[in-house]
Length: 182
Image 1 (tube, helix red, strand yellow):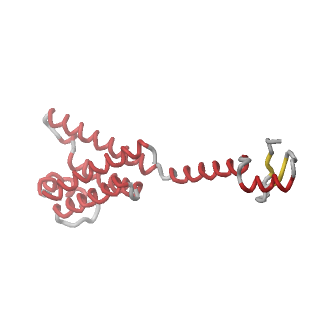
Image 2 (cartoon, helix red, strand yellow; image 1 turned 120 degrees about the vertical axis):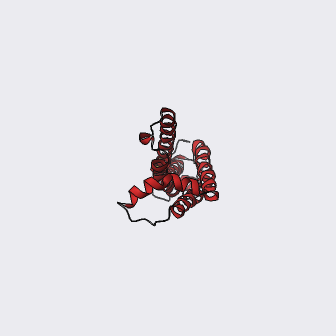
Protein backbone atom coordinates (compact mmCIF):
# COMPACT_ATOMS: atom_id res chain seq x y z
CA UNK A 1 0.00 0.00 0.00
CA UNK A 2 1.33 3.42 -0.91
CA UNK A 3 1.71 6.18 1.70
CA UNK A 4 -1.18 8.05 0.09
CA UNK A 5 -3.42 5.02 0.47
CA UNK A 6 -2.32 4.62 4.07
CA UNK A 7 -3.53 8.15 4.71
CA UNK A 8 -6.54 8.51 2.40
CA UNK A 9 -8.39 5.28 3.11
CA UNK A 10 -8.67 5.82 6.88
CA UNK A 11 -9.69 9.45 6.33
CA UNK A 12 -12.49 8.41 3.98
CA UNK A 13 -13.51 5.53 6.24
CA UNK A 14 -13.69 7.59 9.43
CA UNK A 15 -15.83 10.18 7.63
CA UNK A 16 -18.44 7.50 6.89
CA UNK A 17 -18.25 5.90 10.33
CA UNK A 18 -18.96 9.28 11.95
CA UNK A 19 -21.79 10.07 9.53
CA UNK A 20 -23.34 6.63 9.97
CA UNK A 21 -23.16 6.68 13.76
CA UNK A 22 -24.77 10.13 13.81
CA UNK A 23 -27.59 8.95 11.58
CA UNK A 24 -28.10 5.75 13.58
CA UNK A 25 -28.41 7.75 16.79
CA UNK A 26 -31.08 10.06 15.29
CA UNK A 27 -32.55 8.57 12.09
CA UNK A 28 -35.79 10.57 12.09
CA UNK A 29 -34.50 13.90 10.67
CA UNK A 30 -32.69 12.24 7.73
CA UNK A 31 -35.75 10.04 7.13
CA UNK A 32 -37.98 13.13 6.91
CA UNK A 33 -35.51 14.73 4.52
CA UNK A 34 -35.36 11.59 2.38
CA UNK A 35 -39.15 11.01 2.31
CA UNK A 36 -39.89 12.83 -0.99
CA UNK A 37 -36.97 11.11 -2.75
CA UNK A 38 -37.98 7.71 -1.38
CA UNK A 39 -41.58 8.19 -2.53
CA UNK A 40 -40.39 8.90 -6.07
CA UNK A 41 -38.02 5.94 -5.89
CA UNK A 42 -40.78 3.59 -4.69
CA UNK A 43 -42.67 4.28 -7.92
CA UNK A 44 -39.81 2.62 -9.83
CA UNK A 45 -38.23 0.23 -7.33
CA UNK A 46 -39.96 -1.96 -4.73
CA UNK A 47 -38.76 -0.66 -1.35
CA UNK A 48 -40.05 -1.16 2.19
CA UNK A 49 -42.52 1.50 3.28
CA UNK A 50 -40.69 2.56 6.45
CA UNK A 51 -38.33 5.44 5.69
CA UNK A 52 -36.63 5.25 9.10
CA UNK A 53 -35.66 1.62 8.49
CA UNK A 54 -34.18 2.46 5.09
CA UNK A 55 -32.19 5.32 6.61
CA UNK A 56 -30.93 3.03 9.38
CA UNK A 57 -29.86 0.37 6.86
CA UNK A 58 -28.01 2.99 4.83
CA UNK A 59 -26.32 4.30 7.99
CA UNK A 60 -25.33 0.77 9.06
CA UNK A 61 -23.79 0.16 5.63
CA UNK A 62 -21.81 3.38 6.04
CA UNK A 63 -20.56 2.40 9.51
CA UNK A 64 -19.52 -1.13 8.55
CA UNK A 65 -18.04 -0.27 5.15
CA UNK A 66 -16.35 2.84 6.58
CA UNK A 67 -14.71 0.75 9.29
CA UNK A 68 -13.59 -1.82 6.71
CA UNK A 69 -12.12 0.90 4.50
CA UNK A 70 -10.41 2.63 7.43
CA UNK A 71 -8.77 -0.60 8.58
CA UNK A 72 -7.79 -1.70 5.07
CA UNK A 73 -10.01 -4.81 5.07
CA UNK A 74 -11.53 -5.45 1.63
CA UNK A 75 -11.05 -1.78 0.73
CA UNK A 76 -12.37 -2.03 -2.83
CA UNK A 77 -15.57 -3.78 -1.77
CA UNK A 78 -16.02 -1.32 1.10
CA UNK A 79 -15.46 1.65 -1.20
CA UNK A 80 -18.01 0.32 -3.68
CA UNK A 81 -20.58 -0.13 -0.90
CA UNK A 82 -19.90 3.40 0.35
CA UNK A 83 -20.26 4.88 -3.12
CA UNK A 84 -23.53 3.00 -3.52
CA UNK A 85 -24.82 4.31 -0.20
CA UNK A 86 -23.70 7.87 -0.85
CA UNK A 87 -25.52 8.26 -4.17
CA UNK A 88 -29.07 8.04 -2.75
CA UNK A 89 -27.98 10.02 0.30
CA UNK A 90 -26.76 12.81 -1.96
CA UNK A 91 -29.82 12.80 -4.20
CA UNK A 92 -32.20 12.75 -1.22
CA UNK A 93 -30.31 15.13 1.02
CA UNK A 94 -29.04 17.79 -1.35
CA UNK A 95 -31.54 18.40 -4.18
CA UNK A 96 -30.26 21.89 -4.98
CA UNK A 97 -32.36 22.01 -8.15
CA UNK A 98 -35.53 22.03 -6.01
CA UNK A 99 -34.48 24.92 -3.76
CA UNK A 100 -36.07 28.34 -4.28
CA UNK A 101 -33.94 30.26 -1.77
CA UNK A 102 -30.58 31.24 -3.39
CA UNK A 103 -28.71 30.65 -0.12
CA UNK A 104 -30.20 27.17 0.35
CA UNK A 105 -29.60 26.38 -3.31
CA UNK A 106 -25.91 27.36 -3.00
CA UNK A 107 -25.45 25.38 0.23
CA UNK A 108 -27.04 22.25 -1.23
CA UNK A 109 -25.02 22.62 -4.43
CA UNK A 110 -21.81 22.75 -2.38
CA UNK A 111 -22.76 19.61 -0.42
CA UNK A 112 -23.87 17.87 -3.62
CA UNK A 113 -20.49 18.67 -5.20
CA UNK A 114 -18.62 17.54 -2.09
CA UNK A 115 -20.45 14.23 -2.06
CA UNK A 116 -19.84 13.62 -5.75
CA UNK A 117 -16.14 14.34 -5.17
CA UNK A 118 -16.13 11.79 -2.35
CA UNK A 119 -17.77 9.27 -4.69
CA UNK A 120 -14.94 9.99 -7.13
CA UNK A 121 -12.38 9.23 -4.43
CA UNK A 122 -14.18 6.02 -3.54
CA UNK A 123 -14.25 4.96 -7.18
CA UNK A 124 -10.49 5.59 -7.34
CA UNK A 125 -10.11 3.06 -4.51
CA UNK A 126 -12.37 0.63 -6.38
CA UNK A 127 -10.38 1.13 -9.58
CA UNK A 128 -7.10 0.22 -7.89
CA UNK A 129 -8.05 -3.46 -8.00
CA UNK A 130 -4.85 -4.47 -9.77
CA UNK A 131 -2.57 -2.86 -7.18
CA UNK A 132 -1.70 -6.17 -5.51
CA UNK A 133 -1.20 -7.88 -8.86
CA UNK A 134 1.23 -5.11 -9.88
CA UNK A 135 3.14 -5.49 -6.62
CA UNK A 136 3.35 -9.28 -7.02
CA UNK A 137 4.54 -8.93 -10.63
CA UNK A 138 7.19 -6.39 -9.66
CA UNK A 139 8.43 -8.59 -6.83
CA UNK A 140 8.56 -11.66 -9.06
CA UNK A 141 10.44 -9.75 -11.74
CA UNK A 142 12.90 -8.39 -9.17
CA UNK A 143 13.43 -11.86 -7.72
CA UNK A 144 14.01 -13.31 -11.19
CA UNK A 145 16.46 -10.52 -11.98
CA UNK A 146 18.35 -11.07 -8.71
CA UNK A 147 18.44 -14.83 -9.26
CA UNK A 148 19.71 -14.52 -12.84
CA UNK A 149 22.44 -11.94 -12.29
CA UNK A 150 23.55 -12.28 -8.70
CA UNK A 151 26.94 -14.06 -8.57
CA UNK A 152 26.48 -14.67 -4.85
CA UNK A 153 23.27 -16.64 -5.37
CA UNK A 154 23.79 -20.24 -4.12
CA UNK A 155 22.64 -21.86 -7.38
CA UNK A 156 25.03 -19.72 -9.39
CA UNK A 157 27.90 -20.32 -7.00
CA UNK A 158 27.40 -24.09 -7.42
CA UNK A 159 27.30 -23.69 -11.20
CA UNK A 160 30.52 -21.68 -11.09
CA UNK A 161 32.28 -24.39 -9.07
CA UNK A 162 31.25 -27.17 -11.47
CA UNK A 163 31.88 -25.30 -14.72
CA UNK A 164 35.30 -23.92 -13.89
CA UNK A 165 36.05 -20.41 -15.09
CA UNK A 166 33.90 -20.39 -18.19
CA UNK A 167 32.41 -17.02 -19.08
CA UNK A 168 28.92 -18.46 -19.50
CA UNK A 169 27.55 -21.12 -17.22
CA UNK A 170 24.24 -22.83 -16.88
CA UNK A 171 22.80 -22.67 -13.38
CA UNK A 172 20.97 -25.66 -11.88
CA UNK A 173 17.65 -24.01 -12.77
CA UNK A 174 18.62 -24.18 -16.45
CA UNK A 175 19.20 -20.47 -16.99
CA UNK A 176 22.28 -19.19 -18.76
CA UNK A 177 24.07 -16.48 -16.85
CA UNK A 178 27.14 -14.45 -17.54
CA UNK A 179 29.95 -14.83 -15.05
CA UNK A 180 31.50 -11.40 -14.70
CA UNK A 181 34.13 -12.46 -12.20
CA UNK A 182 36.38 -13.92 -14.71
